[in-house]
Amino acid sequence: MNVSYQSKYANTDIDYLFEAILSLRTQEDCYRFFEDLCTVKEVRDMALRLKVAKLLHSKVSYQIIMSEIQASTATIGRVNKSLRYGADGYQLIFDRLSRPISEH
Image (cartoon, rainbow, N blue to C red; front, side, top):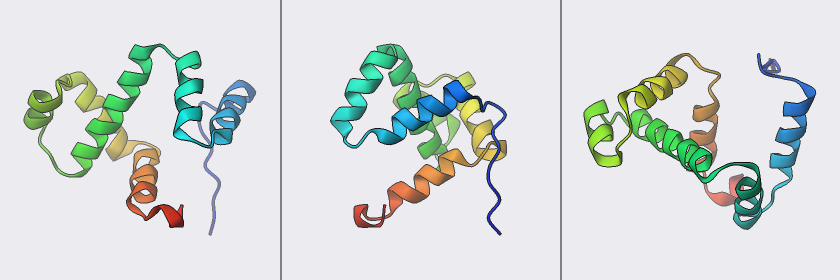
């Protein structure tokens, strides 16, 4: 049974943003688009949250994450909450990035 996910954030502007992101084909495309769209801090914050999620998913402790990558307890807690009760977006990425590139 394939049930389509219905986001609480969905609207036409966000749909257009995601269509734009889905049109990116290379890492260079991503750098160009996100450099124009976001501040450096916003991109770094997103990258940090993904790194925290990956570490939490790998069962790394809060203390190690805080000391090794200087993530705040608030960030770690927020990411952990998303991992446990969110929309499974992180898990989707982990599953896709763990496969060989030819399977994407």
